[in-house]
Structure formats: C-alpha cells, structure tokens
Length: 211
Image (cartoon, rainbow, N blue to C red; front, side, top):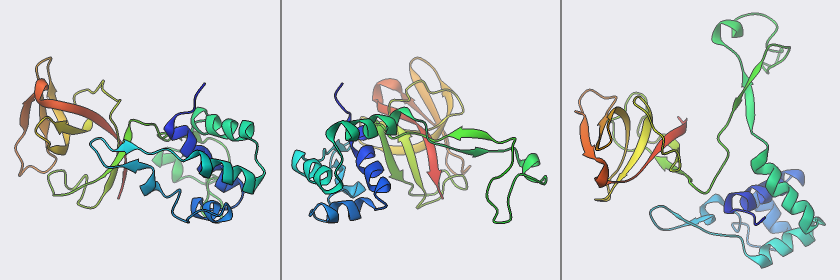
C-alpha cells in the first residue's frame, strides 16, 4: 500500500529520533541541507497548503546514512500513524491526591488513563490566531490545529471556517441547519454571523491549541 504524505514525514521524524537526532541533524548526516526536512518545507503555498513530498534522492541518502532498509523505513511510516500518540490522563480531583506524581512532578503510580493526541494527516493544518473575537479562549498569537476532514461538526464545536469569498475565521457553532450555519464569537463585542452553507468552502473542527 502506498505511503501517504503524513506517513513519509512521520517516518523521517521517527528515524531521526531513533538515531538520537533532530530532523535537521538527520539531514546533515545524510549530506543534505540542514533545512531539508523542516516543517516549513513540508507544505507549499495554496489554500489549503499544497503537500510537498521528500525527494527520492533525499530518502535514499538518509537510508544509506543510517543503514536502514526500505522495508524498515516503511514499517516506521506505518507505525507512526497506526500507533496512537497518548499522554497520561487524570481527573483534577485525583491529581490533588498523593501517589500520582513522583518527586520530580512526573506521572507515577496507577490509576492513570490516556488521552489520545491528534495524529498528523494530510487534511490537518495549523493556523495562528489573529484578532480578539475568540478571546479569552483563543488569544492573538495562539496556534491551533484544524482538521478539514472533520466535517461532522455539531452545535458548540469550535471550528475554522473558510468562505468562498476568501475569509478564514475561528468561531463557535451556535446553530446548524441544512441551509445555514450561525457562528458565534467568545468575545461578546462581536455579534453572531449566519452564513449560507453554499458560501462555505470548508469547515473543520479545532483539535488542539498551543497558548
């Protein structure tokens, strides 16, 4: 089965970690420009951004530099997307009890659940918040991860909407019908907006925010 864009880049990142390197360090070891595998090189201009694929030459050189076979690299690629990324999960009340953290403040003991993190896909992108319409939830400069494939949105979901007129906005869905979508801001200074669905190019759920 062919590897996807996100699988290939995830495999490069995974190979770098296995070698104790950053993606830039892996590129240098292979005799490539240090920026060859930078995140900024993985997508080109466009709306949505156009995926860029690593070249056959660059893949060959990192395999030669690390002694990894093509089969092992393909396994890395599939493992990166088939194995969910998780972090420990605990309720706030439990977190105040003894036995869940060690002396360094790291998770320890039993009783932890897991939170699955969003795995990169070709339909995900990251955007930087501008303006204050979603303050104080999202502030100017915050980065959000959006999945344009998450089309089954519901009332109350926080989404990014791209209109046919070229406007991109982060909002909360206040109402949803077969014909219209009403978008609300967290900041009460901004009134709700109702858009006909035919004017919406795409609408994706916000999965993650870095503040």
